[in-house]
Length: 330
Ligand code: PMV
Image (cartoon, rainbow, N blue to C red; front, side, top):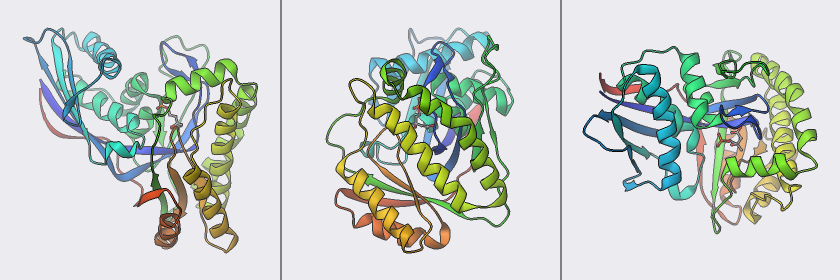
């Protein structure tokens, strides 16, 4: 009853920010992302009847209570579906520096969902796996798939949450989009995305305006991906990011993820664009700068971001693969 899965992280181009149901972890809006090559989480799950409680090791050290609680809740769903009562030992590690604070819950819960279901002897399809991963983290539903991915917000009358799933999008042939990540320094601990989005929904006067941007942005982005129109995809990526952050900035008190390097990174990207290089800014629940571009221009964008004060390192990510089992017995 052991399995090991690997999942790649993803970056939302059209963002998710806000929950409409916290128990089922249903998103207030749909979202659209790119799964990234090279940023992965490897998770081993072993069910063991001799354990008195679930155990979790993250990047070589015992995890804190909050992380263990989130993992146990996902394992409980798998146990009840599979009729397994044994507790589990979960060992998870990222292949990118955790200190860098890049989004890891997406790859972590995608890998956990696949490893746990396989270790419990369950065989479920990708859509059900995406629904399960969503219970751990909204963005994890998208990391079940490779490349461009669309997450559906789901049906308001769905009491089980099975209509809120992700699915892969077919991109225009021959297209080579890239995401350049600029890792910035992290002086303060960030507000976790769950806390930040809940506080935004409860207190921001701009929250409903943000929600109102989502459907149209998703439709524009989907069309741009189908036709390989990076210009349109880039514009909507930047707009969705700033609308999301604007809603968080207007929360009371404000939720501010930007640091100086984030803003300087934005200006560097905007200047590159003015001089003819296709590059658009995005940023998540942390200070790191991300730029959507294409393979041809990725080195140039990375070199420019590396010059921004406070950007410690850069990484060029091509589209990455779907979650997969790398070792497993059941
Ligand atoms: O999956 P969560 O609960 O960590 O939330 C993700 C929130 C953002 O990364 C800011 C946006 C997104 O759609 O990934």
